[in-house]
Image (cartoon, rainbow, N blue to C red):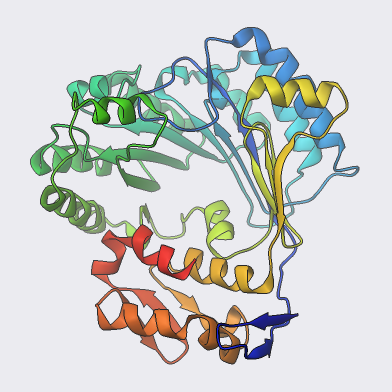
Length: 389
C-alpha cells in the first residue's frame, strides 16, 4: 500500500495486522445513569433484558463460528445488574461464541459494588470469570453523592473483600478531580484503595463530556472544575501512592501489582484486533472498524428484524493504522518500539516532524527506535496523542 505525504513522496508500507485475540461485550443495563456518564447505558429498563439477550444472540450468530480469544472483557453499563437467570444465559452465550484459548487467558467482568453478592460471584466463577473490575470511584460518602453513585463506602469495601475471596483478581476504578475535591481528600481515597486486597487500580480524572448532566451543569456554572494545579498534584499522587504500595504504573491511568496488568486493555494499546458485540460496541478486525448503534432499543430492533446493528464502519488506511498504533501505544509507559509498527522510513516520513516538536517541548523522549511520553507528557496525554492522530 502507498502512503502519499504532504510533499508528494510515496513510500511503501506493508500491512502488519495481528489476528483478533480479544473480545469485548457490552451490557447496557444500569440501576442509575450517573451525571458524568457518556457510555451507552440504559437505566430503569429491565423490561428489555430478554429482548437484549435475543438481539445479542442474533449478533453473535453473525460470527458464523466461535472465535477463540485470549482475553474476554464484559463491560457496561453494569453486567452484574442482571438477575441470576439472565446472567446465566448471558455467560453461556459469550462463553460459546468467544471461548478462551488455553494457557494464560483473562476473563474480566465489570461490576458495581451494590450488585455484588456471593451467589453472583459464584456464578461468574463457574463460567470461568477470573477478574472483577469494580466501579468504586471513591471511598468518601460525600464524593460518592456528588458523583451520583448508588453505593456506600462500606458497600465498596465489602464488595472488594468478597470478590477477592471468591475470584482473587480484583481491579477498581477511582475518579479524581471531582468538583470541590482537594488533593488531601484524593490522597485519602488512594490510601484506602491500596489498603484493600487489590491486584489492579485505574485512576481517572473526571471529564465533562458533552451531552451529560455534568456538562450541562458546567455550562450553567452550578458546578466547577478543579483548578489545573490541583489536578496535576492529584495525578502525581495517583502515581506515587500506589507505587509506594507495590503497584507498577504501566499505562497513563493504570497501575498493577506484578503480573496483574490488564491483558485485555494491553491488546487495545498494542493495536491487536478485537471482536465486539452489544450496543455501542466497537470492533476492529482485519483493519476495519465497525461501531454498533449506541441506542439499545435501535440495536434490539435492527437485530430482531434480521438487520445489521452497525451504525458506522471504516477501513483504515495504512497511514491511519500507523498513527493509531503509535498513539495508543504511547499510553503505555514503556512507549512504542517503532520497528514493531512499520518501516522506520515510513513512520519518520509521516510523524517525524511531530516527534521532533513534541520532544523539543518536553512531552516525548526518543531513544534509538523507541519513543515514550515524559512525566509532563503523561499528564496531558490526550493533547499529545491528538498531535499524532
